[in-house]
Length: 274
Picture 1 (cartoon, rainbow, N blue to C red):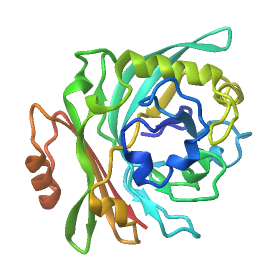
Picture 2: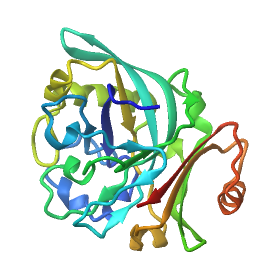
Picture 3: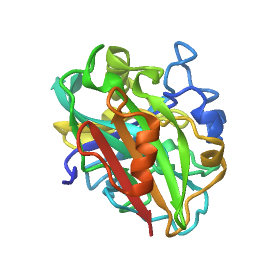
């Protein structure tokens, strides 16, 4: 399954504490927000257009991460990604209708001199991760399927399993449901090319107004291990999005250790670092 005709965006700063841990909080000091918990920006990671420079490269993989040649500080960013249908009116986004969600790795380089968020996000093929296991999402309002789901992530090196991100509830995202949906629509229409943010309306136009978007809605906080350990060749990155009413964190840890996962109400993304 590929999403080569789908435009890709990510939400920056939608989990309290993540940007500080990633050393990125200072990038957003001059970004105006309406309140302390509002996400900082919606950034592009893939534009299905030949005119989008490095963002034209299709970065999604369900099994591999290919590190950049010049960076040794590569981190897992465990997230939920949602596929939305886009409705336009007069070339403006007027609705995002949820379709399905999955485990996602917004794998990122820590690049202090990057002018835009997107420069840390797409350096070619197999630089982002999305699970093949999608779960239907019938709405994005209170009581929807995603409300009971949690995000867990693990790092495996030489058989040693460590938790990489804090096991976190999806409903603990700072913005969620209609509040996040409305904010994303506003950013797609009105975000300016300022500071680390980019003009997304131009990208939508360049891509001839795609019918769908994949949006990763924010990375969880890191464990102390995740904050200080970076990916190396041969490592395995695992992100699990699971129904917390059906499984607990110990169940998930056991599945990771045994490399044997349940199939219902769970989305697993396992990637080997090449």
